[in-house]
Image (cartoon, rainbow, N blue to C red; front, side):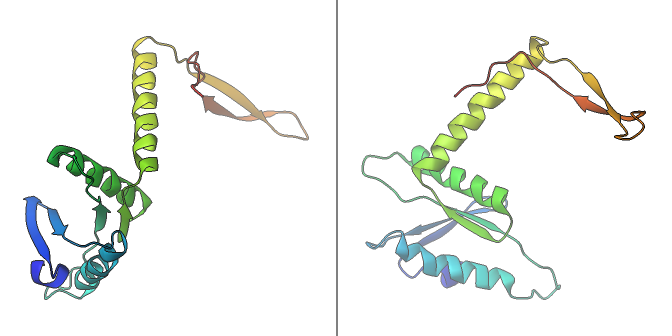
Length: 150
């Protein structure tokens, strides 16, 4: 993979199925498009076993004073967004991804607290036939006393 993705930079395995591509280029983010295209092209080529490879790519652009851990976290956020948007997708980190992740984490914490505080209650709502007004089914609802944040 390294030889086909980056002319000036490096490629390394981070984990079982995660790789890092480090590219040195002045014209970012435009310079990331060529390696991304090459990676997708390489992955879409049929393998000897006929296995289709689907992948997601998360890209982060380094900032002055940024630690390696911070940089990795931003790349992860972009990767999670790419995975959420569907396979064979690449996303470049931007501030909105961090804001979305903060809101998602806050909602997750609020929901977890609500579950443990038993603030949810299961309710069944009758569904009636519009002409006969006879109940034909029941819908489920999970109302909560949790206040939504704005």
